[in-house]
Length: 373
Image (cartoon, rainbow, N blue to C red; front, side):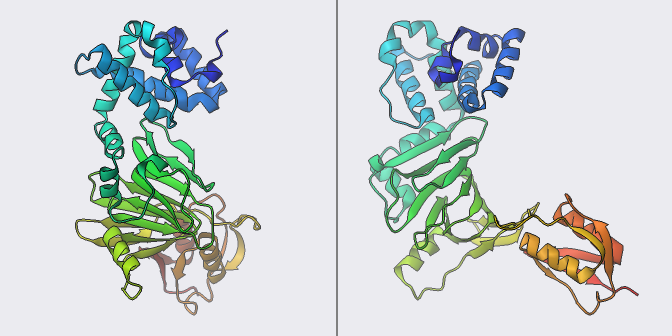
């Protein structure tokens, strides 16, 4: 029996039973691989990457020579595996012609995603890397790791300091093999979720297009697709600062310079428009409860509880500023269970029960009420 649990992308791409599923859509093969993914989640990423590469054959643009095929296949294998490894095509060279569709699929995948191959080449040269990072200090390109997620699924990546990066579909990130002693730097094209290890005075910097996101330790998401003037940063926990890259460079040169940009805390996000040099700060679409490891989650069950106390409970649980008039609400109480209900639904139910309304202004929630008799 074949040990599919140990298969690499190349192994899947040359397996008849795998091809029966992806290339020929055989029902038995499809059922087998769907069940196999569920039973082997640790290999799902590798399997789906091989599937994406094989399906690219449907859009093959032109015919390549054997030498071109071999070159492109080696390039994409190295790119998708993210590690420098000796070429296996010395062993597979004799069977290369038998699997010409494999090389073609690899080439099509690169050409079909456009920026993928161009970005790899862009970051392969010292001059291009220097241009991308502008005036930031960084090690030589040989000391940087280029990660590309060409699949349709998120990919979990461990960074040198133990921080975690979830690289979203069709996104690219670069970082040093070893972070500097005074800073931790990551460049991003696309979208990623970061969970950063706190390290005191050594900041964690994410360069995405014309934006710089600076943190010490937190969980946040960056969305900055190539060619898009609008970029978004949202914070799940902790605090980050977000600034235009030119302003960041200027602020580093002079400590007296007034720094522009914004500071975000949990459940806040900012959309930056590079063409207008403007920041739009607001609450995330679905705020989540902020609970430290030493605390138990709030149950949001209330029994004739003063409305003021309920709003204070929400403020603490979500880390969101809620503005209201204490004197107006002094006679308002609430009896209800709001457990498992989103923040905005909680506010809607609460306001309906006491004859109040709410609106979200930037990152604040404002309660308007005529009071309760």
